[in-house]
Length: 406
Image 1 (spheres, rainbow, N blue to C red):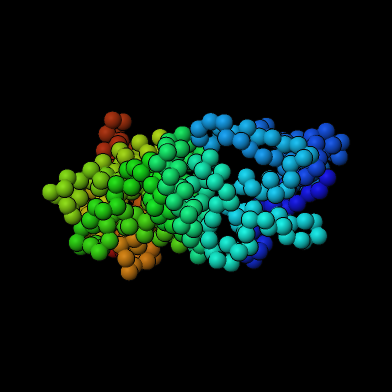
Image 2 (tube, rainbow, N blue to C red):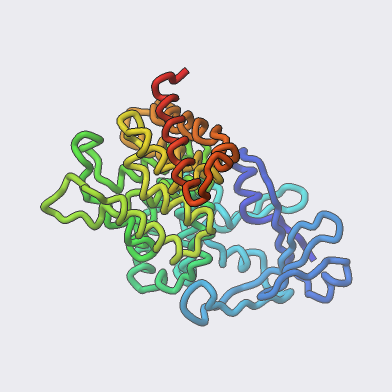
């Protein structure tokens, strides 16, 4: 048997990037031989084993044959006769189809090093079209490798795949997995652009796709449309190292603008409620985690009023803190503020840290949380009056804070 390091570990090493995990392909072996050498089986659909000492993954060389629609419709064949070149041929991109021997020799039958130098994502073979998940992977790679572009012939093939309906067969869990990984890369907006360029965004997230071409209000950033604004917001979230929930909320915060009647544009009166409904629906459809779903809905509903902190009455600020459960969940309230600050940064020429309402909301929340609820409750002879007394005390605290911001 002969083992080779393959895929991302080889690619990243050639790019001078840190290598986190190494995957191996084994040529000329059988499951029985791997077990006899102490490897532990973990593959369910094809033979994959864990090394007895390093726990790195070793997969037997295999070929794949399309047998149905979507990314699961494959029949895999692994045997000692499958060559390294045949195994590499089934991979998605040339930059991921380079192997390295244990002594460091590179085996590159499909020009992966050439495309690394040219900064190109190019498919290895026409078999790329058999797996629609590869469209999402290419888009995610674009968010990570920010100086790479998709080769024209690969983009054309991705467009053909979308036209053939392959993307329709992706399951929500896998779509979410790729979206989540792409959003956590350096430039998540590039993932959305690639999906839009090939037509996949209109299938996977049509609510976002329809924002492109819808104008922004003139007072904000009239030279870009709403879709471009959203991409700027998402990249602002990445630039300020926000967690996944904030980035997801940034992506969905303006979906309701797609419901604005044409005669109202470029204004978007009252779009927040529609944005909140759509953010919830998209998150549920793609099976986003609860923390991502709830924050996205909250940011979509509240981001407009959050930006007006300096003009709001204390009563209004307290009501917002209460309906967002800021007293019990101040950490989530802070994440909402961070998303709103990214929305501010996504209007061009401004940064996340410039958003003045951030300090106002933090101070208001601190004032409200400093209220001694137990003392107020004890002072009420009738328990049914406790909620009103607490609310009044919170409003008074915010009002006092506004008069003396120090």
